[in-house]
Length: 482
Image (cartoon, rainbow, N blue to C red; front, side, top):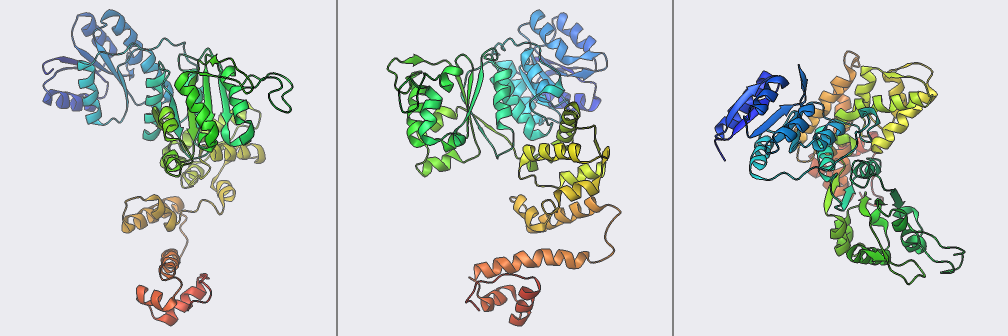
């Protein structure tokens, strides 16, 4: 309720001012400090109903103070803010008992909502976890806003056994998220077992999942422990769940509902104790609508959804990913490499259809095949030739609700940023016109089913002019249509 006191510790004066004004308007009394020592003195003196603290401050680390506050003042909740936006920070904040973790820059409404929740809700005790390894060994890399949300969801799930459905394009790192859920969760002492549904023949899926008895079918010369049995006490990762045959889906649903299964050819029910994490690059709701995926199984799996963003939605993470994979390559003996700023900018322009897997393969290739220690723009251009040049068509496709004019401007800004002082001497006007002309004429011909007369009228061009442009631009027209 209004009137409660909030202790704010942050060495950034501007942030202290913003929080003081925002929380003051909500009726809270706010005390501000820029160091850990003053915050701890206030807490030990019995002041404050809630603490908001930064991580790195001149005289200490706000995360180190969280367990001390919990021990000395268990009634006081702690919200942690940090510009060190890694999975480790989010996990550590949760491990040490923070009520909420917010990456900087934070949304002010999100922070005030967290303040109100902290002061009105009783916090769940966090799971006890072992000390983690350093950041370089973390499974997920990136500090973008999109990845921050992924980290926060993982951190909140460490103490639960809830089923999780991870969605995302191929190469985004879905198995890494599944492993993080296991390695930082309460089942980390148990096994992590993965099975790729797309890689198992349909007739063998039930045997792979649930095992079989000797003699259950031709070739079953001995008993086989299926993945459910192998994962007992741990986590079972069902990758590419969208490729699972409908008949196997029915049996999986029964196991999830009843908590037990029988092996193929067996009669004695076996109790199962596994956490289910599933992943897919397909749209399961669309498959449900097509009758290819059971709706009841979808809801059983999709208790907590995690969407992994494609790399093109988090281009700011590319430098961190490149450095990470370069370090890995060096540790594997492939040679120590560096990437110039220009080369890094060139990589940021790439769409990365293969996502993180594609950038990892590129970096390993650079480390293995190039003798020079410094990788420049020419090398990256050579490696990505034909796949990365920013085109207007691509930019418009990526723009969502953005207007065409805004997309054109964004595309041209990227063009000038990419070339810097090395702009070509002439021809940009014609080059941009060609970029616009070709898709415009293509789409007009498609809309008129290849009728050049109607397309010319639609475009406001003379028919002969349109024919010349079709010829010059080498545009294919439907045969038999004038």
